[in-house]
Image 1 (cartoon, helix red, strand yellow):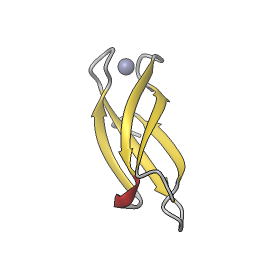
Image 2: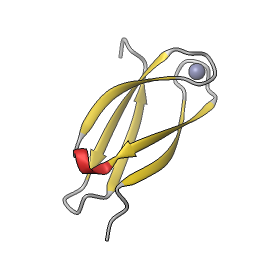
Image 3: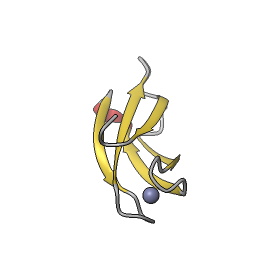
Image 4: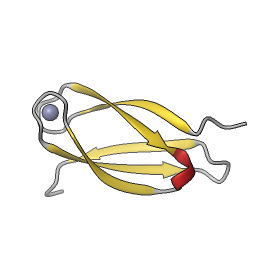
Length: 65
Ligand SMILES: [Zn+2]
């Protein structure tokens, strides 16, 4: 059985600090904004979920990328 909520760590593209986020894998592929916990910039998270509902890829992008 897959884990539905994954705790992930991403590197903020603005300040370079590691930030944590929870990803709900039941939502499938998704992209949304999460404010960096360090510099408060809006980081765009691009989440890819595979056919089995497992997290396969996470990308962090600046707002203007
Ligand atoms: Zn930051």
